[in-house]
Image (cartoon, rainbow, N blue to C red; front, side, top):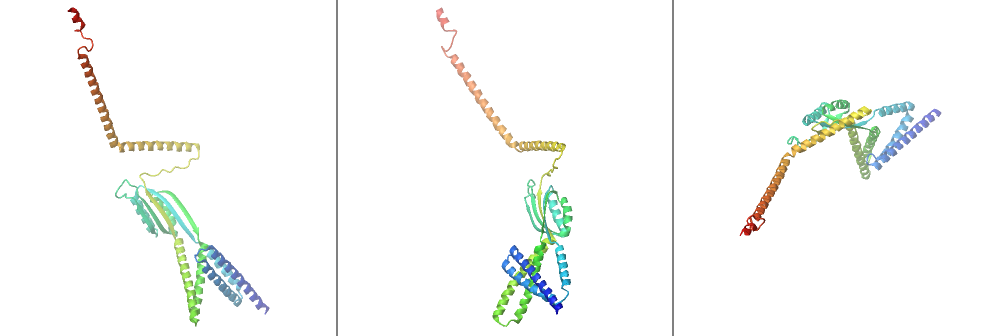
Length: 341
């Protein structure tokens, strides 16, 4: 009798500890609010916790090897926690001198690694107007195990300017959703059994409402797990491709005095070259306008000189006419001839 009482005492203690831990997990899951149906999920989790506790108590009272079962449970939990669920995302900024070849390279590399193109967009009319630079945006889904091969082959697409990497550990959310899904399926089975035994129509109606709520939550949990599996198995790679006329020069950050002087010298030469190139482009590009402006200015100067010449000629004729008039100015036939008479 004493030995049996001890077993029952240990069974009750194990059941109480399991119920307390599951209720705490239910409370933390409901406070986090990750599923969108917090109240219903918390009630369901609490009910499942009590049911699991009862099952644990029955198993513990029926079997004397409860310690072995507990060790097996802890080892299973450790194995589950060791399987981390990581979602990886990468973002690339790439520029290229050969846009069409780079676009084909992205699609070929993605398909060759067993991935697929989730989104794609190409802007610009480079095919019609060669002077217009084009750009492309891709969202690729690549298998997690082939992600290293993508990183090695991305440099062949074009000049990689920037790479941003982010990862999200969803292990806790994943296994929490998985455990809640198992609990909901167990509750669904119990409700179906109760519906078979129900005699009153009111009981059947209430059970159908409860079953519909459970089925709805099961569908939500199943969809969430599928989305997690997709994001974990296939990494998301975003590629922003830009067509350029010449490659961007990326200099190392100078550290020593010589590197700083060399960096500033190269920078000054680059500025002078860009300024000279800009001036040459402006002059040659504006040559028709400059020629027209020069012709207009030359015509204005020519007419001004012509008007001035006409004015000078008219002024000279006027002065000559004034000098030729009688009594106008000193004449040699004036007073001298009268004195002789």
